[in-house]
Amino acid sequence: MSITVFSVPATLTIDLNNAFTNQGLFNTVYDNLPTGRDYTVTGISFPFLGMTCKTEGILNTYMDIKDAISRLYNYCMKSYLEPVWAVLKSLLKALETIVGKLLDLDLTIPVLNLTLDDLFSNNLYNKLITSITNLYNNSVDQLKDLLKFLGIPFKTYNDTDSPETSIAYLVKNIMVSLWGQLIKKISDVLQAIKTGLTAYDALTKPGVFPPPLSRTWEDTRDAILGKISLFFLTGGPSVQEILDALVAFVKKALNKTSVTAQEVLDYLTNFTLPIFGKPFDWDLPFHGGVNSPQKNLEQLIADIKNYCTNYIGVIIAQFMKAITAILSVFGLSFSVPVLTISYTVCATPNQPA
Image (tube, rainbow, N blue to C red; front, side, top):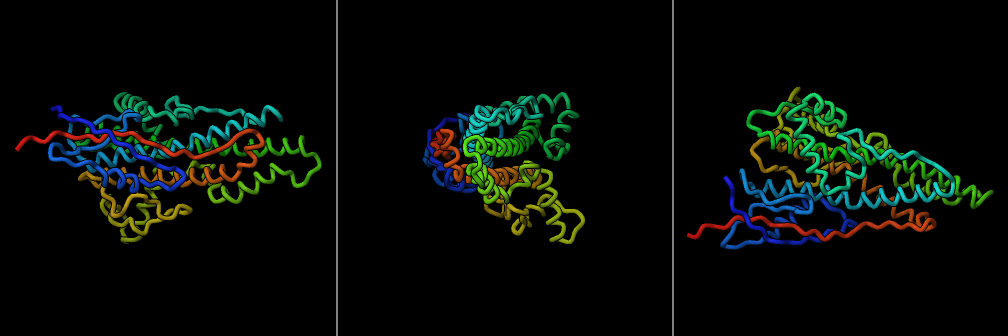
């Protein structure tokens, strides 16, 4: 049955130079929802991400806003990683025009015929929905292979899940896992640039020791990126690794050989991951908004994965800011954007008393 829904335009400003969290974004939106006697707010949507107000099914304002905020969080991350990637590619190209070929940069991702450029498309979510729906309905084995490659656990969803719900959870996990492919590729480009700067110094400052640009690059890289160097090889912890670590932590805390999803959710407070510390940017205890501990846990794990990627990405952005002098030599600059987000508050009209 279709539900009558109308929309109220709203805007949100996010300075990506400052830390942003899922909970912070949620609070900003949720605490400023409009109120009125004539309507009831049912959710929010971000049309530029291909989202529309829900007009069918069960309306759960809290859960629907949380889901939308997770999409917005991913967009915020994309919005500063895109200039990181663009400037690094430009620096590599500038060096190659002077010192020769440094890297055969392969932009493909071995997943669903995607490329790295697809990660920066606002239509990626909908593209994944189409692809995963096809695999879900027609090729479960291929879907399992895909999830295994990305480090996402596969499970048979219970009969209470609609295919649409199951696919949405799968797509969320896939979307947050794809960023690891970019992180690994950034590592290749950073190494090629180091080689290029060494050659550039030899051409422009022969006999000068230490070589000015390559030494500055190396010292800055070690000082800022050294902490996350392992993740350039792995792309960061996978969804499966995060889940395994979390379950192992709760088993030890409860002295049990197996634990339920609800027990995991109940004992999150002191959980940490090496390097990342407490990997939560939702307030605890975590409430996913649905009466399904398993689904709430899946949502939380995906958001932890995104938190880890953002943690790595912010450090890479700090490195980019620290190499301003090197970038300027090649006519380049780097800045993190301030976003003005237009979104829609969804509401249903109240029946007159």
